[in-house]
Image (tube, rainbow, N blue to C red):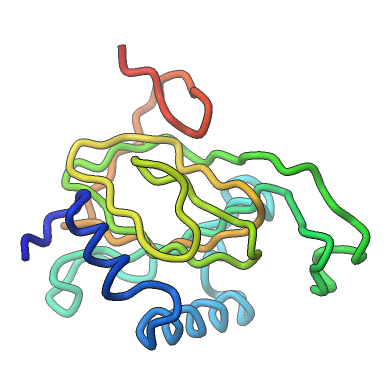
Length: 180
């Protein structure tokens, strides 16, 4: 199978390593442990709702992918939440979208989407993704966007390549951009 980031790889990852598989569930447990230990996604980019940390640079052990963790919180909390850090059980915040920093994937990107709230989703290039994977292909660009709660994404970048332009384009709904 061709493993370049893009729709075919995204479909493969979501069919072979989806939420509910032993691989995904074990990875999710490790990610949540890192978040609880406060070393994963520990660098604030926009207060406590948008944090990131690089786990490793591209190297032979990762097949020359860098690995970074990003935590994004849209501000929405389902009424069934029992986590003390989320407020009282009756506190329900408006279901909004939250977008992070615009960036370009010169060689594509692979994202493991780990949701911390049942209703949370991350926008992929082709639509919203709950627990699972997105894989924007080479040359894609976007504002990473979440809705419905909190998401942690591990993003894998071929050769560690990502670009943050100094003048990003205007935001459109759902983190999409106007490239005209």
